[in-house]
Image (tube, rainbow, N blue to C red; front, side, top):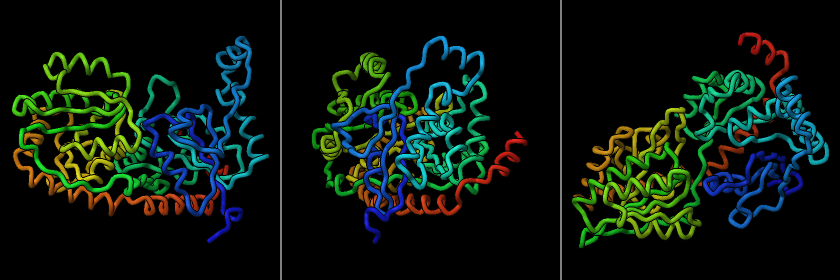
Length: 401
């Protein structure tokens, strides 16, 4: 093994380090084995939840309002330049060298594409879900994304469905590598479950409260399930802009007393919630803006504990859940089909919990952290070996836009 000082260095660039729903990035950054890393960010959040010492917080360079307006709207200078970020990054890597940069989230990569072109080391960018949206309101965004694809040796995608979407957006298929994040399996041990004798089924969903998580479908399906099992409860762990809408909807559906919002939970509290629950829901859906899932980490965590899953045929979910074997998959926005799946699981508890056992085994085989990190570091090795795409090749590619 290499000594710490002999390991290659990857700079991990994440615009915000870190929001509560970005736990998977923290796990990845802190689990590297053959690489050292330091984090570069524009905003530090969650320092207590996600402690990390080797972090560089980029200062916001002062820019007079009139000059900013002139550069942005009159001269049409790209934002990375008129904000002064390009010079900041160039100076940073002159004093703190790295062998490559891993840029988290595709839209951040688009923003940094001038640096990607200017820096003399290779960069890779990883796409996680929302960052494959076309952003049609941002004129020229897709062209800039395509330009980014020409400037990097590799592009990472959290699921095959996201990889397919990147191909549709113009990314060469040969540049794409899967970057599935691992689950800390020791923190989510398997739990034996029994059906509640009084029908007090405990259902759970853990996610950010946004449209693509299918929460409206969850509430409608639970309302139908609750009519059959009036002692049942539904806990939603997470927070987000839809919270008040969901409370109002629960009141209209007459399930408000059976619904509980916990906000975002720490890992130990979330594990406890999973251990106390019987069924996990995650009916994700494609939004009007084409926001889609990779493979939801919360779903994998729940599966690791042995929870049977009721989810949808969406994004990367079918890559982790085998319909009828480790859970049930129904069409997007089909609350009747989701309710039917929930009723089946409650009516056949032995089969439901056997599904949970198979789900746990599947996650432990396919999403072990060591396996995920080994594949990520192999992508780092490959990107360094490939190096920066030759400028003339990138220019020839751009000439065909």
